[in-house]
Structure formats: structure tokens, C-alpha cells
Length: 332
Ligand code: NAI
Image (tube, rainbow, N blue to C red; front, side):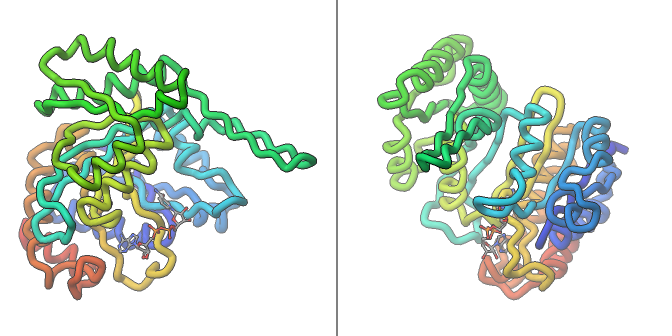
């Protein structure tokens, strides 16, 4: 049995987590969950956003599955997600976006993976606010080491999955230093993978290309904020945040997460779609080398998604969270 830390999170988190647990039990996946929470829920009950017991569990198990966590806008605590990424140097945010038969989207041949640098750039936490002058400085710190790690991760993935092309998205025409450094690092690392084509695109053009001709992309790598925006754009190409997986991966630890938020508008109503968390859990199974289990659950999920009636409301169906999970279990 592989021990994995399970963070249910806030809002719809516990509901979608229960669905994933039920599917894993039915599929007899050899994973033992160690449940530890974080975020608004633990803040309300224990006065702590990131309880010590959770951090110890993560350090011990080194693999986690995480539900969404509420972050107040413009005030209150620093995002728990960002804290976890920086605390454990989870430098690669990996977001696959692939067209799924049965899920409505504008395109039918999207199959790409985005690698977003996850700890630097505008998320470095270097913020200065001059109260008197009313000036806010948000400093974007990009390091060569940080660029090297994320670009290497993208090329390694492309190599392993036999992808043909890596696209580097940047703004080197304006951000002369950070952009040039990323491009220089990418050109150097690309030499180690002569069978993989490397191209670069300025971020604004990249956005246009993605919404006009997304089939041309394979693996995309970029800095933190550009990646944050592109990753949701890519989710929009294949059906939205409710259906895409995400992973935060470092050299020592990996946290797999639903990329959507805690959806307070539907929390507790049994309506949430667990697909995003389940797909993240499937990514996790590949990561811990439980590939047969990953393929089995994926096949049952894909078969369920093809039948609109069996899907949750956000996908045009009538099923609640539990019924949707049961349809998947029935197909295992
Ligand atoms: P949200 O993703 O929670 O909700 C946006 C819309 O999508 C809502 O209408 C919601 O009902 C729907 N939705 C989201 N996930 C769904 C699911 N699995 N099934 C069915 N419908 C779903 O985004 P919002 O409202 O901007 O954020 C709410 C809270 O979540 C905020 O506190 C935000 O900071 C946090 N958040 C956390 C994230 C994380 O932990 N990774 C990511 C994004 C937001």
C-alpha cells in the first residue's frame, strides 16, 4: 500500500474527494489515504491555515491529492496553494488539456500540456506598497536556475511522451532580462534533445494562436503569471476548469490538485463535478507507477463522460456528484 496525503480542502472539496475515494476503493487501488486538511476549514476550526500535522504528513508521504482551497481576494491570508508550492519547491505546474469525446468545446483535436514555472516571477512575494505616495511595486524575480528547472522538466516530459515540439512562451521584447534569460536557457537545453523541435512565441501572439489553432501545440513552457493565465485559457479549449487535471511537482514531492476553486455557490449541494480531481488522481497514479489502475479508471471515466445523461449538470447532465461517481464505478 502506498500512503498518500489527502487534503479535502474547502467548499466542494470534501464532496469531490469522497467521490474519488469511492472510485479508488471500487478499483482496489493500493493507496492508503492519510487525511489532513488545510485552508479556510482548518483556519475556522483550529486557527491554522497549514497545520503542522499536514506539513509532517506531506514530508513523510511526498505525494498528495488536494481539493480546492478558498483564498480571499485582495485581503486576508496568503494563498495556501502558493505557500505549499514555495515551501516544498514544487517548481513545475503541469496542466494537460486534451479534447474529450462527450465534453462540449469549440475544438476537437486539442492535445497539449502546459508547464508553468510555479514559484518565481510575480509570485515571488516581493511586494512593496508606499502608503504615502499610493504606489504598489510587485517585483517579478526570475532566476536562471528556476528557468533551467522548468525548461528541463518540459523537455523531459516531451521526450518521455514522444512529443514533437516544445513552445516557449515569453515577453522578451519588453521584459528584456527575464525573457532573454528564459530563451537562452531554452536554447541551451534544447540542444540535448535534437529530435524535439523548439520554437518560441511572444505571449500575446501565443494567446491568439491558442484560441485560433490550438492543435499546433504540443508542450508549452512559460513563466509563472503567463502560465497561470495560459493554463486557464487551455482549460477553456477543452471544456473548462471542471474537467482538467493539475499537478505541482518538485524533485522531492508532488501535489496533485483540482485546478478549479472551492465553488461556494454549489458547495454542500451534491452537484459538483469530480472529474478534475479524479483526473488529477489519475495523473498521481502514473506518478507513483500504478499505471494499470490509472488506465482502468481513466477508461471508466471516459466512457461515462461520453454519456451526457450520466454527467453532472455543468456538463449538461442530471447526475449529482455521487451518482456520477457510481456510473464510473459501474464501468470499472
Ligand atoms: P471556482 O472555480 O470556485 O468557481 C467558478 C464557477 O465554476 C462557479 O460557478 C462554480 O460553481 C463552478 N465550478 C467550479 N468547480 C466546479 C466543479 N467541480 N463542478 C461544477 N462546477 C464547478 O472559482 P471562484 O468562484 O473564482 O473561486 C472560489 C474560491 O476558490 C476563491 O476563494 C478562490 O481563491 C479559490 N480558488 C482555489 C483554487 C485552488 O485551490 N486550486 C483555484 C481557483 C480558485
